[in-house]
Length: 204
Image (tube, rainbow, N blue to C red; front, side):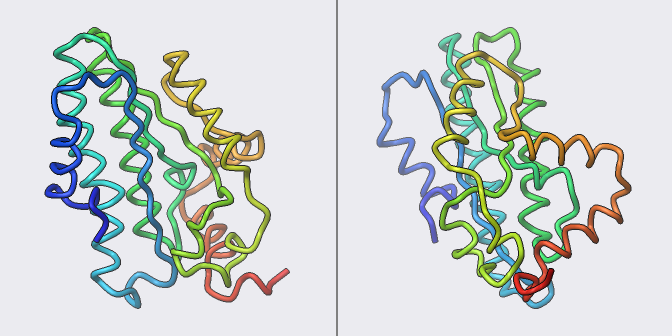
């Protein structure tokens, strides 16, 4: 299991940091898993939750507290536009990203007078090994063209350094988020099915 997916692994990372001050904290762990929820291996499901939520929130708690005590620092969470839609055939991943999108903004407002800023980057599908590792290469979203990871990272970094609350990378993703705010959840779930259902890569 990934080191940062467990409290013990996160503690090892924290011990390596030691007493050094942290100015910038990037919490960008993310792992997905395709296919229907009831067909998934529970150990893999648990790994998604532990990586995307447990390890991320624990690091934010322990290292964010040090930043707040010192009175300065910047934290960047990587959420996702997936957090705005029910993730049919990717239900656990979208649920964890909905949590991160919400949690990061709440934390920002808790820390608003501390000297620590919190920013959440919400990208769309990005050209990394994410979809391969999530066993989603036979899906439409897995096979479609994706955003350049360098561009996404630059967008997040610039937003963090500017102290922004949140940023969606890419104009297409911005349009998708705007539409998600006025679209019924059931409709969004069916739209997501067409992107993430196994075998959808071969569909028009």
